[in-house]
Length: 182
Image (cartoon, rainbow, N blue to C red; front, side, top):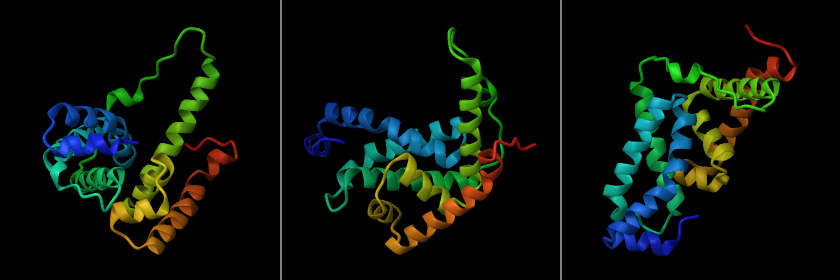
């Protein structure tokens, strides 16, 4: 949770406060971008774009909405724009696995596999369903915060989440049964 005094100082032109504010939110911004775009490089680009936009638009933030809701709206809009322009690409970095000495390799592999299955399933959701899933389950937003962030009616958010959970259940069916898709 970002301190309101820090936000006010940043809005008043305190450069140090603004830098501190950006550092406090950068992980949250990246995490949202990564799960929406499902690609590390694209997420880094979107995060940078979002942080720059927050930097330049901090004075337009009004306390009508929560600060994190305002930030998520910026990140989500940038990701949606990138998603629409995105051309298929493969990152070599995403295919590397690194194990640390002493770790249980089998557990590491199963955990990595489960995380990848879930990430892939989320990536297969329609854009609007993926966005509400990321905000709800990865950013821990309330339904009202999601509605505010995406400028949607509350019932639409609930409907999107319901349908997204149904789709995820179908997409993850093989994994839940212990099967391997191929």
